[in-house]
Image (cartoon, rainbow, N blue to C red; front, side):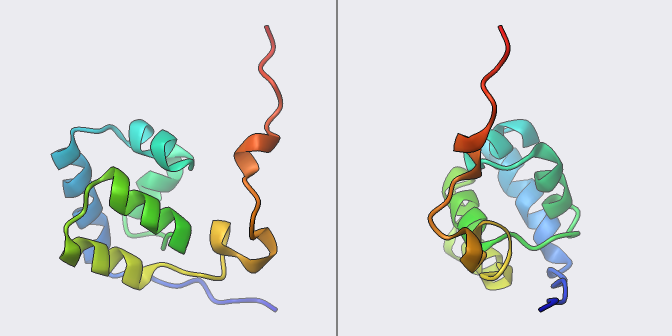
Length: 102
């Protein structure tokens, strides 16, 4: 089954950028706290992608979004892709990384 990519609301990116600025965090810090790549945060801030429901929930906490902001973010989140994909239920890709070379 091929699913169509969802298009986020145009206002999503600017809202996330403002929230990140308000929190005083860099994209890399938000990415590390949420467990995604910095490039994905950049795509969210440019309204190029919709987050998974799990990532959206984590962003709400990390960025301390107010109720209206959280509603927008959760409203555009997808539950059948990314970390919320049913095939990935209960997995955490971060634990499968190779150990750093010393």
